[in-house]
Length: 107
Length: 119
Image 1 (cartoon, rainbow over the protein chains, first blue to last red):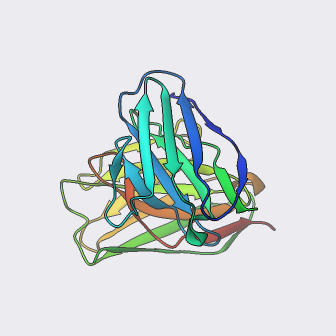
Image 2 (image 1 turned 120 degrees about the vertical axis):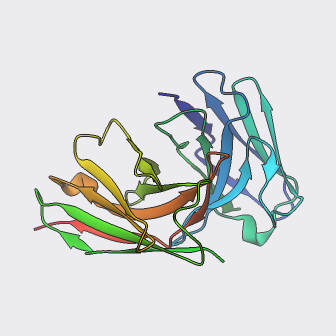
């Protein structure tokens, strides 16, 4: 199984800040990684697939990149609606796993 | 617009079988482009993929649950279902059904249903 380590587990930031979340996989998975946003009481929402392709409607302040086994999700200027929990999901092979989550909180 | 909706008991006794159904509306479950999956989230915890099914009935389960899981599909009703046997408190979670498209990403999710295992 592909293991993934997501960091940080929590992040406190202010509106307008730039933040980066990282996922590191246990083996090279190419671009097979997706990012989700989850707000309390809601299902996760797909933001980015195939490492850096945007789902329709995702604001341009989100960006994503891949370098070997390291994947990053960056929000360039935090907006109030961005405070949520973010998960990465390696999708190279089953069984699929998810990162442990990064809870982004307002400072 | 495609929508998924989970249904089933919210309370299951230990050692019994958890049964949930996901109804797909606004599109066909028989599409060759998608798998249909189940994912759960324990209270305050992360996400765990349970397994998925193709319209043909082909399945793959998470090995951690494989001995207890069955996912089935009813194309005539546009539904797919989850059965998890011999449940314990550790199976208490929000259960989501989701569509998995060819990018191996879950692009449409149900709202989730909370299942509590308790006597």
